Length: 112
Length: 113
Image 1: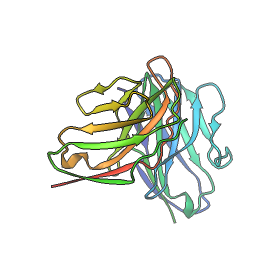
Image 2: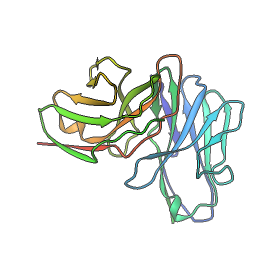
Image 3: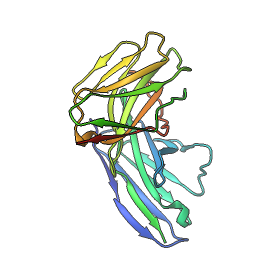
């Protein structure tokens, strides 16, 4: 199975600033996904990131707020822009490989 | 993706079988039933998936009804480490295709000593 490294594991940020979360995979994968998990809630898909094309965002998420980069088949970043306390969540990257989905351990973000 | 319905919470005694139900009455012919779990403060973990036949692996068994409208995940001998939120998901799957995973609220399973 694929190994996913996500950085940072946690951070505390000031409102109005931006944070970029990195996701590194130990093998080449076509499709990567970013999720948000708000406190006490299930995971919500933010966007799908394919290498060489713009990310596809789910309803309720926009590129200006959550810009995503996918420069190669092993790496992706998610930026949470102009943060507010409502952005305090766990952000997870995921990849598809064969029939399975694999998930990173997440980035726990607290906005103060 | 088809919607699934799961009970919000369940308890199970340690050492007993945990049977987690899932309804997916609108499942399409090319959609598989997948189960994931999320232990507190960790990323979701794949458990098992199936199309129409019952499946078993080292973690669990998956029983899918003949009409495919419901399924049950069975943890044969639950331990305290199985306490987690369990997600039942239907999606286009199989080894040659990949579809995004959309999570519902899941079932919070508590294994009690």
